[in-house]
Length: 525
Ligand code: FAD
Image (cartoon, rainbow, N blue to C red; front, side, top):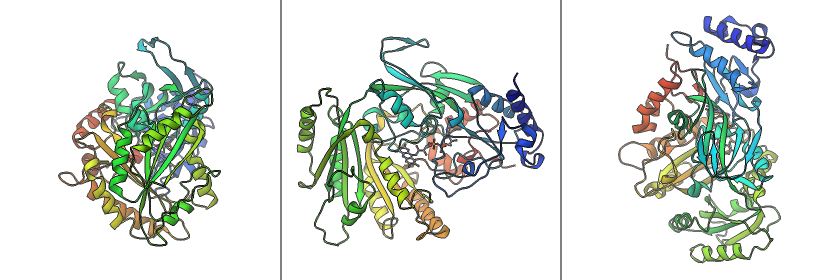
């Protein structure tokens, strides 16, 4: 046993014996410099910047075994452990979900971040039949790092998030969605295998056929059942280029009808999203920009009147190796011919696949320049059954969008049959198989919106979410990426799958060590 491991035991045992915060003045005094470390300011911060819960210590694991030692010791303490543990990728949570007040934050970025790409071949992988190309990746790797490695082999994952500077473990704990999800499902539908350290401290390799209950529990599991340390991600051939198209609408009904048309054409279309344009001026000054080299300044002729427009964004992969894009142009022409956008308002550009997937980086840079990146982000994300999307849009117009609004509103459809009901992710029941993601992505500029104003926005979002997610009648939406205020709200959120969630918690994290920042299983005594 090396010194590092010894320190780990010492740390865990000390935590069992006494309340960590009262027993130890400084984690490094007692545990030495290697294992548990003093928290840094970032361990009590996230992208949302509305919750700040300082941990007692952080762990920078070098391997799954390090995490197993910590969790094994903590979970064997009767009647319950003295410290909780939260995994933290890069803390792009919105409401403290990767934080652990007075507990321990496990920083997964310190795990090995190797990306091993295996090209397609028929055969058996770890005893399971596969004909797919895949990548074995460390859970602390960013999706952009996975992409860079896979592209070297001409391959790429199928399903993405809009922003790539998120960890694999972090997005798989939620769902991971973007404009490819209508075609391939969320990221959690594109995982072949996981290595997980359960709340009991067991290191388990699981898949659809090997320990399937744990595999499905952890996918969309909000960090409640184990810490993902590695993931095997499905790959496909990466297109060298992408034709990226935008079409504008002045009617919400026509906009959503066309989006639903596009997702019914998976043979032709590879990506579908959309966003609201709150007034014509905002699209010109917006950070939701096309590449700078494109002359993109649509004029809808609203002449200063406040009128809302809608934009569909779709993309077609160009797999032609010879540099000719005639077939992709033909596909776009064919698709566009069936759409009902404002005729003179369709714009398109060809970009590399990497630049397309990394497009939000441009937005990040723009927001950073404006000082709007490291500010509070009171976001609201909801999955909405098709029948409720127009009603929810109207509700937003009357509330959230009635006043001063700074940010973006994404609206795009997804197909529920691409989501595996065995995972822990929660989506609404949508009788016709179509649901929308509606994302209100707000930045609170401190010069215009102080703490009180952020609280007001959050309260406003809570009221909208309560109305949209009300059980029995109504819209029947489900929140995504949200921390529910109480366990009663969580029960309502999970609905019929609450009992399964509870049983999985009892099986894999019986003493409720993991994921305190979600507030699902608070310690009340
Ligand atoms: P963290 O915030 O560090 O952790 C998130 C949760 O997962 C916490 O509960 C944490 O404890 C748990 N967790 C983290 N790592 C692990 C692990 N290895 N094992 C088990 N549990 C773990 N989401 C989308 O679906 N689509 C998008 O397009 C999208 N775009 C985004 C853009 C921005 C700018 C931001 C800030 C967020 C976006 N998100 C999007 C949300 C994002 O997917 C989640 O917030 C995700 O959790 C962030 O990953 P992270 O590494 O920062 O996770």
